[in-house]
Length: 167
Image 1 (cartoon, helix red, strand yellow):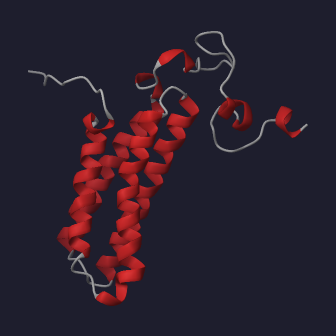
Image 2 (cartoon, helix red, strand yellow):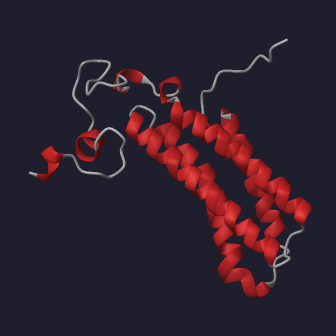
Image 3 (cartoon, one colour):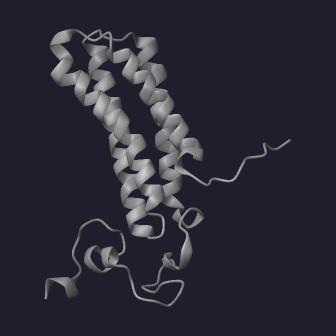
């Protein structure tokens, strides 16, 4: 029997957002136990990166009219999730968290990362309107012009300038 899912109308409806929020809140609670000398170092860094995963997912949702912008924000969320994994590993090595807690949080971030990668690999399932890029072509589904981001940064939205932009 397949699960009936309600339509996604808001970023808070996204399973990946809900998972990132849940693990981010767990990280916040866990950092309350970190030593006070870590307050302006590891504690702040891990709280910032764990929160940023959710913030970047929300931003991606609002930019889903443009494939490159959508994917770029999801890539940012992916990077922040990986950064949080590194910080929690440092906490493990400093013995601020136990092995079991580390594994659980790391596994939760692996799940979030997998969800983000699937969205990045298949933006056509999420991008809305006539701004979705036709795969393999430099045209829009609407036949219209490329958005400013794509003109400036190329198809992937990586920040690499096109030859035309350099002239």
